[in-house]
Amino acid sequence: MSSTDPRAVPDRCPGALSTHQAADGALARTRLPGGRCTPAQMHALAGAARDLGNGSMELTSRGNIQFRSVSDPDELARRLAGAGLLPSSTHERVRNILASPLSGRVGGVSDVRDLVPELDEAVRATAELADLPGRTLFALDDGRGDVIVASPDFGVQAVGPSNYALVLAGGDTGVRLDESEVVDRLLESATAFVRLRAGEWRLSELDDGPARVLEMMGLSPSEAAHLPVAVEGVPPIGWLTQVDGRVSLGGALALGTLDARLAEFVAAIDRPLVITPWRSIVVCDLEEGMAEEVVRVLAPMGMIFDENSPWIDASACIGSPGCDKSHADVRTDLTDAIAEGTIERGVRQHWAGCDRRCGRPKGDVVDVVAGPTGYRVF
Image (cartoon, rainbow, N blue to C red; front, side, top):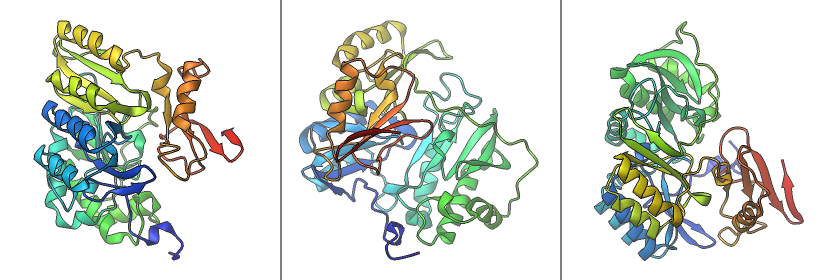
């Protein structure tokens, strides 16, 4: 690997303890395995955004929370630790675990909820996995194919109530696992990557990575039919009836931005919360009357429960002035375009301030990229 290759230097993916210096100040990120967040934790996050950041939080495509313009990183880390959001100082950047947000409540082949804390605890308990890059991604897909499309380094997708396909670098290996094997096999595959990598950030960058990992694990692809190509994940928006008769509410946020005041109202609902990979929030386990009241209160505050809103298909990098590499204030320009009605629901668009296209979602996306002379559409 040449000295000019960015992977020749350590991965600088931000965390709660290792902030990134952006044009608008320190940027910090806290991991939420499976996107899970308790009401008390949301309240703590809201307070941190208000007191130590720019007054809002950014939801990420991995179901995590990001703070900008952090004035006191040490105090932020202290608050996150106090809320149970920083259980490990050594592994805090590698706790990137996606899980199907509606698993066990609405649809799916299997319920992966119990696998999330089990995997998180096991990763933190394995000292060698502290050497994983911060860009590493685990995924637990309940069979609907909604999170496996993120091309995780190490993941599983349910093929039966307690049977899973092992997925490496986003592809089905052909190996089939019983539920009791899932966590151990994911740990083995991640450990193999640590031992094989020579600066690569993702398993897909390692030559013959999945095959070499399987060989180190003593596994061979089975003759099982490979998983069908999954469709793009669809964000759960609006009224979602759970199998137990209660309701989950899926709410999108313009540009995935959650301001502190709205976050405090979300916390006050006092129900389980899931941050999704589509930068939205699912409020779970509501009685019908309470769900109706939540919509009445939160919709005027900016929570989007309309599945036809153009914001559901629109995303953007931070742009100017938050990034000194950006050629435009892309967020304001995108907001203006939506207000003018020039963007319609059904076509995914990502607006970026430069050719790096930071934050671009996976899949079929129209790129609107700013340059020195204006925007280009790809």
